Structure formats: C-alpha cells, structure tokens
Length: 256
Image 1 (cartoon, helix red, strand yellow):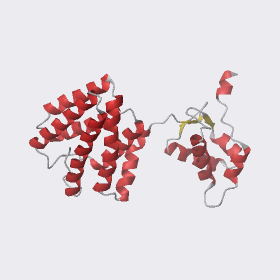
Image 2 (cartoon, rainbow, N blue to C red):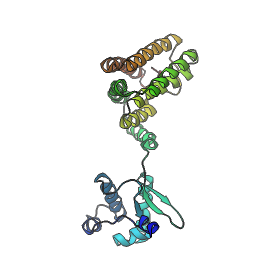
Image 3 (cartoon, rainbow, N blue to C red):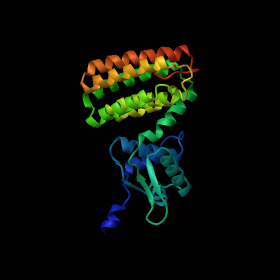
Image 4 (cartoon, rainbow, N blue to C red):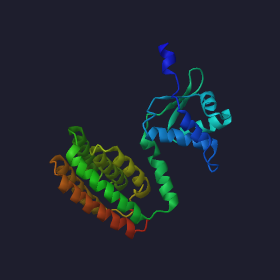
C-alpha cells in the first residue's frame, strides 16, 4: 500500500485543469500543460521528486490525446523540469534541478542575440564584484584552500599562457563559488562561456605576473574577511578586463 501511495500523481485542481483546457487559442494544448506545471512549481504546488504521472495519466487528467500529453512531457524534459523513466514503474517526476546544465544553453542564446563585449563585461562586473564581497563574508576554509591551490598552479604555469588562462578562469569561478550564492555562480558560468577566451593570443608573461599579483591580493582580502576591499579590488580588476576585451573588439581576447 505504501508503494502505491508514493506513486500517486500530483492531483491538479479542477479550476486549473479547466484553465488549461479553455485558454485562448494562441497556445497549443501541450504548451498549456507545460505552462501549468511551470506555474505550479513557482507557486510551490509542485516540488522536486513529486510524481507527475505517466503519459496516460496526463492525457486523462487534461482530457487530451496521448500525443498531446507526450509532447508536453518531452518539452518538460527538455526544459529540465521533469525526469522521465521508461518501462514498468516509470513516469515523470519533477526534477531536482541542476542549473549548471543550462548555463551553456543561456550562453549560446546570448551569443546568438549578438550581445556586445561591453554588455557581457558590464554584467560580469556586477556579478563578480558582488561575488567577491560575499566570498569575503562566506568563504569556508576549504574555499580558501582552493583559491590558494589555484594560485600555486598559476604560478607554476606562468609561462604556459594557455594553461594560465584556464587557471585564471577557474580562480574567478572559485571566488564566485566561495560566495555560496548559486545564482551568481550559474550566471558567471554562462557569461564566461561567451567572454572567456580559449587561447590567450595577446597575453605576455608580464601581464600574467600582474594578474597573478591581483588574484593573490584578492585571495588575501577574502581570507581577511575584508568584504569592501575584495569588492573594490574585483571591481577594478574587471574594469581592466572590460577595457581590454572591448578594445580588442572580441578578437584575440586576453585573460585577466
């Protein structure tokens, strides 16, 4: 009996079902089901791991064909809202969520939109300065240890500029992670997909040394819990990055 109870799909109220079925013609029936599920999530009427039901369940509940229900489930799965298990005992459950999976997808959409280097760097500046401030407030000993490890690795790679570029990116991301704000982390990952160069074609060992000095000072401020100092230093640092990226007009971008 307990197993049966756990597999009962979430009941959708009659008024909501009616709203889905009799909404305007502008949306397809499957799109309306997707909208209901999304709205129910935001309203906390659905939560991770809730059993939404099978294709047959949804078709019966909304009075639609199984083709419509199948289309809705496929869309929900593509959006990362549900996880679908096939076979006996299968069906759709509300996913637990992994926003990092969609960071690259957001980056692709930004790139397709044609956002400029200046737009990306202005947004990155806002995210990274706040992340540095929060990192100084919230960083754990493990976070500090990770920053120090990345600094040592960067020191060893000072003449391998491609590796240094990747380590610099990892350092910036580690600062964001030390903020313990997942929204900032995911936003930064998305922007880095667009803004961060794969190869550092204009960098020099002298520039790399300057960057390493800034990163070291930033790690020091975070460890000292100097939130204002960390924010100010990161702000100045990202301003420098912005100037270089915009001047290069997106070509031959260099890591900072």
